[in-house]
Length: 489
Ligand code: ADP
Ligand code: MG
Image (cartoon, rainbow, N blue to C red; front, side):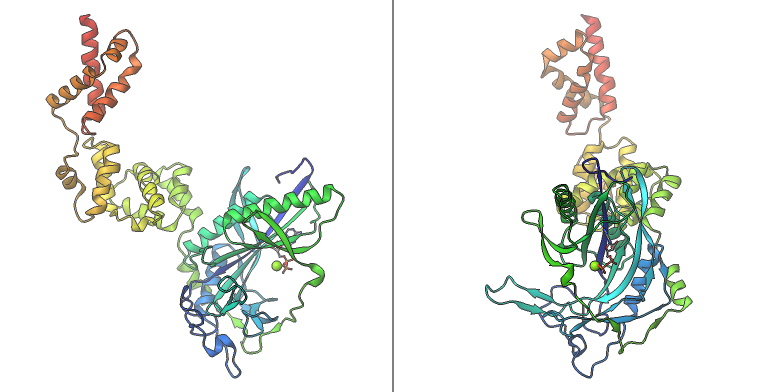
């Protein structure tokens, strides 16, 4: 069910997403694709399309496009080919972009998203391969523009959805899912800040329930998932205001201005380009063998949705836990390493979702850089479940020590740092006595029936013991002591 705006409109959104493929070299020659190199250092005569040069297709790029197609349940088209899309632009040295047009490599397919009404599939139209252009840079000199052609010829896939999303939230969700998926299957780092995932949003509105599509605008220049959402919401609102005031929506290409959250027209449909497409004469059509496709299929990792189901059925985890474990591929890999050492699956999920996630967020690092050996996490969990250590000491002090000494055993570290919970009753008695003496009025109130204060006393003892007192034991001893003194009254 679509979101209904102002009681009578619904929005329709289709996304065109460009993803840079993580190949070492460009789509049609051996130039490096590395990001951040000195300007114009990765440009051979082929990238510049100097006379007499011939392109040669990068097999890895084809493999990656097929892998993505398989991950999205597309139909892989064994016969596909490139065309020339002719236009002039300073960052396009060839004068045309080599792109698949009438015969893309993948057709159809879908991406699973979560909506307020539950999970559903967003339909895709196709995926095609194309080369990237260079970059025009306008912010170095006040009165001149610079061109860096390093990016020219980098392989891209363009993933074109059907007009099958009905709110900015759904579009946001779709981009998140697709980004996770391309990273998951290792075809791109999908880093929006570096431009390796770019999105154009097509937006239209129509009377709620009308099967006919309304006139769309295409919004470009969306460089973060947050901006995709902002731009779509702005457009829906702008279009509704137009229609409400009796005007028609014009088919336009617009650009998003992130500074003030608005969009502005860059061209109308009447000015649409005629690209004079024709099949690229310098590249033979691609004919994929069945073996080639089957080998890619065989090497495909288990996808997030499959693992979410598996973690619930095999390890008894909740949907929430399972989902956070598959939020990134590295996290699920780490989870699976830790459970080689323990079958306390729930505790592993809690540690990953709690203390480890905090470290990742605070230090902006992925899980494989947190420096916690999987076996050590399992050992930490065991120390807590055996009652040798309380969770808060384990997840702060001992976890920090493990990260500093990843080679040492957590039990040895806990001993060295004197963190293990104590069984020494005299010591516990002492802390309890100090705690109760520090708040005589609360003790008095407890005796008069405010039994809820027991938590406060336990907390005070924990504090005095610096976490070394086993809370359950303290609770038992406190009750015995306080009730005994109540009886004595
Ligand atoms: P282009 O002219 O940009 O090559 P297409 O017609 O193939 O266009 O559409 C490009 C994108 O626009 C697709 O993702 C498609 O789903 C989306 N789209 C097409 N029509 C509409 C519409 N009326 N409202 C929203 N999205 C649309
Ligand atoms: Mg388009």
